[in-house]
Image (tube, rainbow, N blue to C red; front, side, top):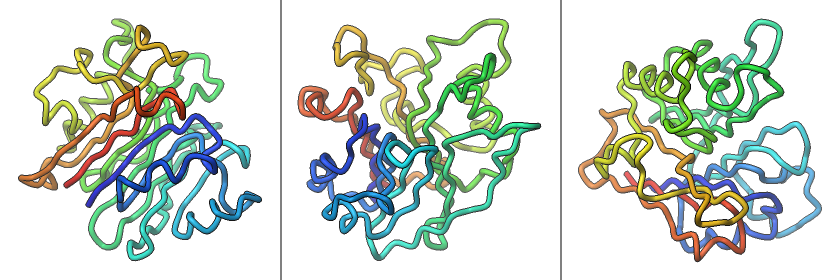
Length: 233
């Protein structure tokens, strides 16, 4: 199975065909429009098998799959005390595994923005052993704060206890926070590049031929400030 995650930086209706050559089985796309409400006929036809969530019709989180792959939404909790934890989209892929698509937001939180939102989501949904966790986390170990208990590293420790690892780091041997391949280029500036898009996979699901590729920014900078990450297993 080939999986792609990409923050398209909006206007996905004009960009979706750029992914066709990757021949992905499943695509997790951040900042994409809701196909149901789109007036763009080619986009609606292309998005024939999908799940989508969003607060506005123009910018949300989508899972798009080939027509022969069944993706069934899961009713995982996103209610934390008196507020919701947004932009997490869980589904069941066939009868094989769970997939949690992510787009970590600040969510107007004064203390638990971005990776803190995923930390909260994992407190609500603890049975994640057979789950791929994929998407734009807007996070990296370099931004850990010593006096905060929901850092990037704390989330990694939660996943590690469930036997789930970052495939980029597993396959390259690079340490968290020392990534040589960047996935996000602030203001499309190579001098402001960070690794913030991830594929996490249960260790018992990693095949002997598993691979992960971070695509070249030069090929994608006209479309987005993020590059696609391609995982094959």
